[in-house]
Image 1: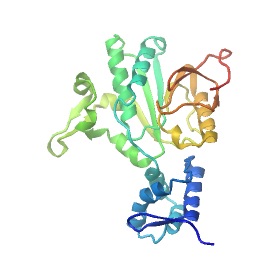
Image 2 (image 1 turned 90 degrees about the vertical axis):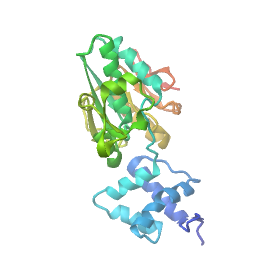
Image 3 (image 1 turned 120 degrees about the vertical axis):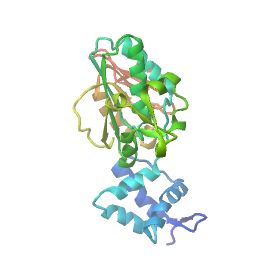
Length: 291
C-alpha cells in the first residue's frame, strides 16, 4: 500500500508514517500536539536538520534523534517545531496587574516569589524584574525583595536569556527611564546592543524544565506566568499542567496565561479574574469549576 507523501519546493518528502512517528515523539516527550495538516510545518521546520546532518530521509533523522544520548537532537527538534517568539513588555496588562498586586495585595509579603514558566529567551522575566523594581521604588519600598524563577525546556534559548544581552531595537517599547536605570549600553564590537544591569540579572534564576514532567522545586509562588505555551498542548496535557501549576501557587496567588489562550474545558480550582488571569482562592473559599 502506497503512503501519502508531502513534498516541498526543495524536494524534501515526508511520508505519513514519518509524520506519525515525529508527532508521537513530540507528544510523548514534550506534550506537543501535532495534528494532521501540520505536514508542511514539520517538513519546513525540520528540513534544516536533514540538510545539516546529511540525512537521506525523515525516518533516518528520527532514528538519529532517538539514538542521541546527549539529548541535544531532541531539543533541536522541539526548538524547531515550536515558536520562541517573545518581546519585552509583551501583553503589558499582566505587568500592570502585577505591579498593583505588589503594592496592594502583596504589601505584607517580604519577598514576592514569581515563576516565569516558559521564559524563552528571557524577555519576560527581565520585564518582570524591571517593572517590579520601578514600581517598588516609586512606592517607596525599594528594599522589598522579590525573586524570579525562569524556566524553559530549551537549552538554546536559556543560553540567550542567561547572557542578558539584546539588540537595542528589542528595547524600543521600554520607557526611557527604564533604559537609563536598568540597561548598560554596549560599545566597540558590542555597539548596538544593551545588557541588563547586574541588579536586574541577580533577581532571576534560570533553569531548564519540561512542563509535562514533575516539577523539581518545592517552593510556592505568589505569581506564575505560563503564557503562550498552552496552545501547543492537548486538553489532557493542559489539564495536568494547570493543576500542577495551581498546586505551586500560594493562596491568593495569580496564574497568567496568554491572551490568545484560555482554560475553557479545563477543570481547575482557580477563580477567573479577568481575561488570561486566574486567582487561587484561600482554602475553603474556592470551588472546583469548569469554564
